[in-house]
Picture 1 (cartoon, helix red, strand yellow):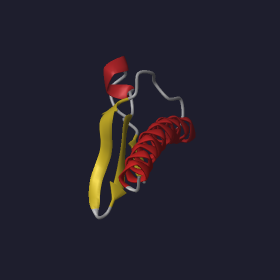
Picture 2 (picture 1 turned 135 degrees about the horizontal axis):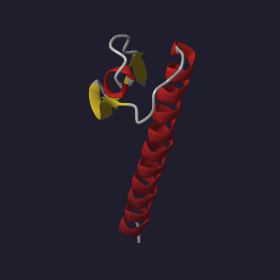
Picture 3 (picture 1 turned 180 degrees about the vertical axis):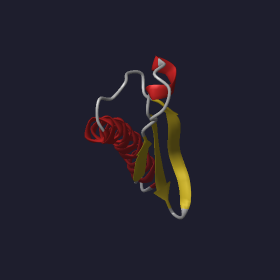
Length: 84
């Protein structure tokens, strides 16, 4: 997993001050899940922005893990049926 944050420091408009978060999950040398978007709220510090980015990446990791577990269970069930 890789995640990063780009904190916008510039004009005082709300749109420009929102940080951009991004993450990529790799498996077998290829990207299987990724995202890059502006955060919905303005972070007051780089620490807060990093925390929000890490939280988003963690939620995605949990979801990806559940999907992969369902695939593994399905493959095991199919494997059990072949041996009968």
